[in-house]
Amino acid sequence: MSNRILVTGGLGFIGSHTVVELQNEGFEVVIVDNLSNADEGVMEGITAITGRLPVFEKFDLRDKDKVEAFFSKYDDINGVIHFAASKAVGESVENPLLYYENNLGVLTYILQELVKKGSAHFIFSSSCTVYGQADSMPITENAPVKPAESPYGNTKQVGEEIIKDVCKVTPQLSAIALRYFNPIGAHPSVEIGELPIGVPQNLVPYITQTGVGLREQLSVFGDDYPTPDGTCIRDYIHVVDVAKAHVAALKRLIEDKNENNYEVFNLGTGKGSSVLEVIHSFERVSGKKLNYRIAQRRSGDVVQAFADTKKANEILGWKAQSTLDDAIQSAWDWEKKIRDYQEVSI
Ligand code: UFG
Image 1 (tube, rainbow, N blue to C red):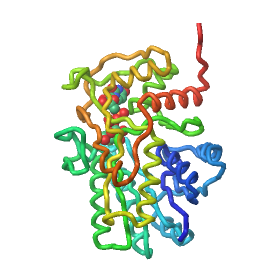
Image 2: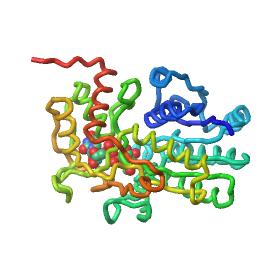
Image 3: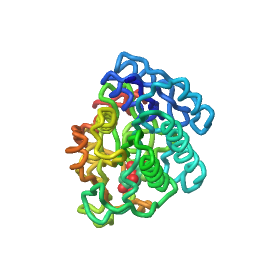
Image 4: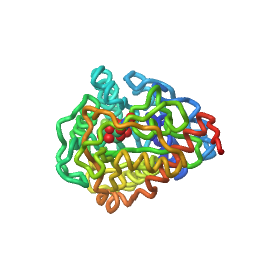
C-alpha cells in the first residue's frame, strides 16, 4: 500500500506542522496549496526540520478539473488531510459565498474523487465552534451541535454532515473529523509558525505582535463575563500537539483500527485559560510587560470552551504534551525571529 498522503493547505499554519510530523513518521507528502493564506517559503522551513522536501502542487482546489487531474496523476494517494479552507469568522459574514465555495464546494470535489477509489482515508479540519456555547464544561463529543453563529461556523457543521452522509453510503471510505479548540504556538525549531496576514484576529498572534512593537496595544474583549477573572476562557493547544493528533488519526484509519467509518474527536488540552491568564503567560515567558487595555466585548464570543479529551486520549491514543507556557514561548520565539527582533537589556 502506498505511503503517499495529500495535505491540502499544507503550507498553512496547522498544515505545515502536520506535514513535518507526517514526514518524520516516514509518510510521502504531496501538498496542494493556492498560497492564498500561505507563503511558499514554508517549504524551506519544512525541509530544514525534516531533511526532506515535500512535493508541492500549486493550484486552487475550486477548479474541479484540476482536482480530477490531480487524483489521476497521483493515483496512489492513500490518505487525505484536508486543511485548505477559509477561516476568518468576520470575513465569512461579509462574504458567505466565498466560504461556502471554498469550504464546502471544494470538500465535495475531493470526496467525489475519494469515492471513486477502492479505499480512502480522510481527515477533516473541524472546530469547537460547532458546539457554540456548550451547556456544560468540559465539552464532550456528544455535546449538541448548536446553530452556527457565522457562515464560517456553518461550513464546519455542514462539512461534518456531508462527510457523514457520504461515509454512510461509501463503506470503502473512512473519515475522522477533528474538532480543534484553539491551536497556537510554533515549531520549537522556529523554522515554521503562524503567519497571519494583516492585523491578527486571534489572541496569541496579537499578543506577540504587540510584544515586538508591531501593534501598540492589545484590546481585551470584555472583563465582565461570568468567569473567575471576568475574561473569556478557551482551551489553547500547541500546534505541534494538534499536528501529532492528525498523524494518530490517519494511522488509525490506515491500520483499520476505527470502530466506524466516520468518527469525531476533540483536540484540546482539557484545560481552560482566560485571556488574562494567556497575557500573564506571555509576560512570564518573555519577561516583558504587555501593553493592554480592557475593551468592549466582541460580538459572537462564547464565554468559555474547553475540551473533554478523554475520547482522543483513550481511543485515538493521543494526548497533548505541551503546557500553555511552552506554546506561548514558541509563539514568542517565532515572532521574534520573523521580525528580527532584538531584546534590549538595560
Ligand atoms: N481576544 C481578545 N483580544 C483580541 C483577540 C482575541 O481579547 O485581540 C479574546 C477573544 O475575545 C476570545 C479569546 O481572546 O475570548 C480567543 O480569541 P481568538 O480569536 O484567538 O479565538 P476564538 O476562540 O474566538 O476563535 C477560535 C478560532 C475560530 C473559531 C472560534 C470558535 O480562531 O476559527 O475559535 O470555535 F471560529
